[in-house]
Length: 203
Image (cartoon, rainbow, N blue to C red; front, side, top):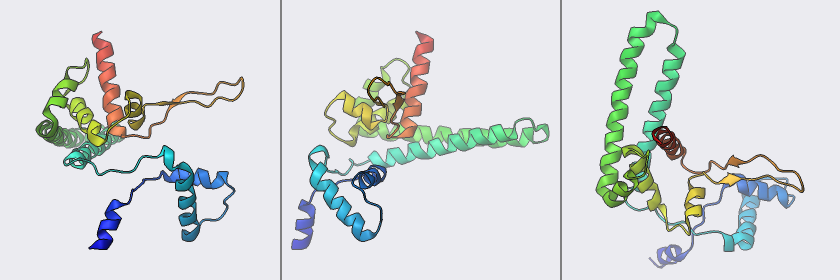
């Protein structure tokens, strides 16, 4: 229909809710209603559109691989919590060992699925990432997948997308602490950290 054609031509922007709330506070907004939210979004887009990039749909397979990575991360987190909570209980040691062994097998199955999906979709990119010191099969698959999300303007833009960019809080002569923004996929940051540690040990 004509209405769908018009809608398809409209640019879509994803706005960080936390950033928008800070914007509301900066202009003196004290109330929050649906009507005021709509007005705030309109004002934000009118003033900040030049610095924003329209949202684009991810490529086929991207969401699937990321969901597999997220499920693996949750499984690993649950296993570690279980191991820590049952540590020091000898009466539960055998049952806990059996359970964690099953969880590890499931982790392995998810890892194999991630690697297979990424290789089938972006085999050349996975192989290229695999050549980096310390980068294993899982990290190379995750890197190759995440890089498909969009056309990044520079390597710094990709680093910021991963949440590995450094935020500074300086004022006058005062030098504030530096910290990572951590606004990207957390599971990939953990994989990259492990890869860096592996590379450092083998250096």
